[in-house]
Length: 119
Image 1 (cartoon, one colour):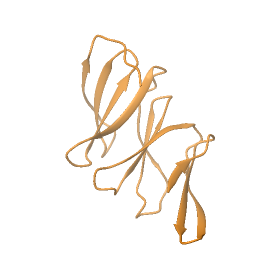
Image 2: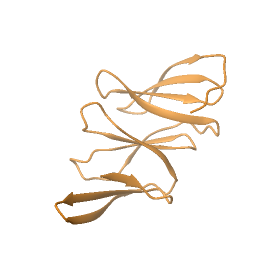
Image 3: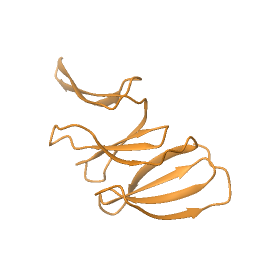
Image 4: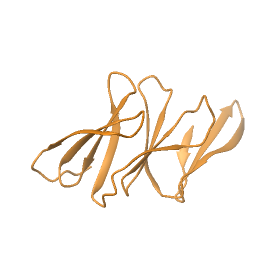
């Protein structure tokens, strides 16, 4: 079970029978608004409401890697663009949908929906 604390800490609970272990996986020092697993469960996106997206790979047990920073106060959400784990899509409250490369955080494309978006 993965969850985030309000301070931007990614925590893993390993639960087996009536026993559990707690492990702090990453500290990104920004409140995490959502956690999204890739379709094959090899990567976890950590999304902040300030527009920063981090990648965490549970099998590698390393630190979270900053993938992109939209630096937008109107950033709303992000998710994997399937199939595969190579691209991410984000959306702003103003309705701008953006596509990013997860390899290096390169901005690839955008589309303006022309409407305000809400979750």
